[in-house]
Length: 191
Image (cartoon, rainbow, N blue to C red; front, side, top):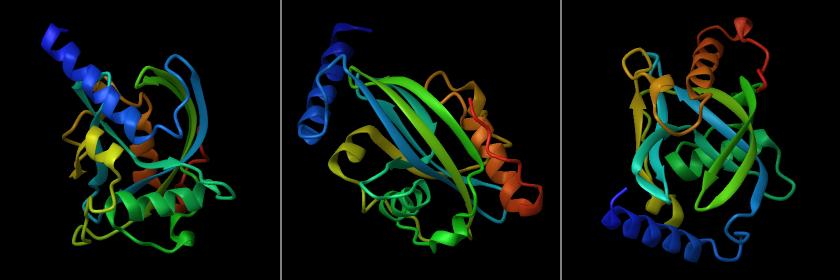
């Protein structure tokens, strides 16, 4: 990285830390959390994903699923439903999410913190005509997320991205299988 990009990364991390000041442990600490995530699938087989960056490496962009950490008393399914509404503006009944299609533990670094998060991933069928909006993004999401978009997994090589969730391609495959034929849905996979 150049000196200019180092400074940009430092500024982005500082802005992220200011946004989540009350929730973040000190730099270098480990954050352990459970997340509810969701892969919306349209009638053409496209999936709705988000694209963003890690604040300490803002020049490296990657795709990831909609979702976030569980709030107190919330199940993974409820968190996925809430995050779908907040991050994409799509509201669905909780039972439309069905059973998890993928589960794994994702370990990564974010804003100079180690993160170990259990991801419980759901799938939901939606029409491509559904209105998608980023109006519910908080300041931290605005800072680290550049877009939410329908992605054709047959065209975009999700397994080849240089950063981001290593299991993204598997999550998308499981979501597609589940939505196309719920009776053939594989049991959740764990990594």
